[in-house]
Amino acid sequence: MSKILLLGGTGWLGKTLSRLALEGNHRLTALARGTEAFAPGATAVVADRAAPDAYAKVEKDDWDLVIELTSTPEFAREALGRLGGTARNWVFVSSCSAYADQSEPGADETARVLNPLAVDDRHAEPDYGRAKSTCEELSRRVRDGRVLVVRPGLIGGPGDPSGRSSYWPLRFAESRDPVLVPADPDSRQSVQILDVRDLAAFILDAGLAGLHGFANAVGAQHTLGQALGMARDAAAAVAPTEAPAPAHTLAEYDLARMEGDRVNPWAGPRSLPLVLPADPEFAGFARRSDARALSMGLRRRSLRETFEDIVRAGDGTGTASLRSGLAAEEETALLLR
Ligand SMILES: NC(=O)c1ccc[n+]([C@@H]2O[C@H](COP(=O)([O-])OP(=O)(O)OC[C@H]3O[C@@H](n4cnc5c(N)ncnc54)[C@H](OP(=O)(O)O)[C@@H]3O)[C@@H](O)[C@H]2O)c1
Image 1 (cartoon, helix red, strand yellow):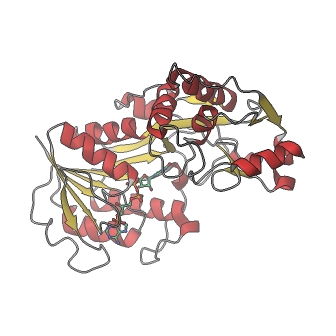
Image 2 (tube, helix red, strand yellow; image 1 turned 135 degrees about the horizontal axis):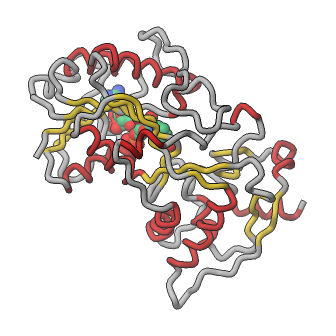
């Protein structure tokens, strides 16, 4: 049994990490303000990391592993100052957004990262990648290299708060017909979704094993067409026998229309989730090398399995409440144009 401190714990990954650590019979303490619930069984330390005494309740302990989820360099610096000298192992959860260039397919962990910010800059949304790069740099420096920097690509799975991984399987589980799908989805489109449960297991296992260095934590690479096919198959497989999934007609939508129709790529309202912008700048997006993480022990379930679990967890609720995708009326209007 190890003593693990999670800096975070109320978000999606944080709760998944907490659950998994507790299932593994570790002692799990999570520190956050508590804007959402902590995982049941976690020892919750409610603290605002902007406050001077934020770490008072945790800084005297001997931690086998600290897992840091922040994107705020000030928070990363303070936590490293208070805990970084004594914690046995440290994982910083960064992001593939920390990379300076998203245009090179197959790029590995040696690729250049964005220039770090001045540490006192408050993390602002457009600077997410630079903020992560800054936290990476601070972690490496204070820990003298004894840190595992995990760079997830797109995280997916049941409960995805962004809706990016859920839209397509849940859309195929709905009865509305036809389904608007990208035409020629394999042309320039790649998908790498890592299941949040596999990411959490990797962070815990590699972190507790004391592995150091950098690792892209990305899903297996698929074309968008393959991913859509798996979403469709998953919806059919999960549908109850008394109400089988509808045999949808696919209405192919020319992606060249997106700008004129004000349909967003990738994520958010009025979007086609997982569809990348046409810009060559994104030619390496969702095509990152996964070799290092696999050699460090990352194990991945299939994307089809992730999609099936999304449909099961959705329990017939459909796409209406997702933060990404087309609303039913938007889809219908686009199909009528
Ligand atoms: N989703 C993706 O596809 C993706 C891709 C790449 C990387 N990532 C990274 O993966 C991680 C996801 O973590 P997550 O799902 O658990 O959600 P998150 O929202 O990124 O977690 C942030 C945590 O920090 C806590 N926090 C924020 N401000 C705080 C403050 N002032 N004081 C104390 N705690 C504070 C939040 O809790 P409270 O609000 O309760 O304080 C929350 O538990 C992040 O590191 C993210 O950058 C995500």
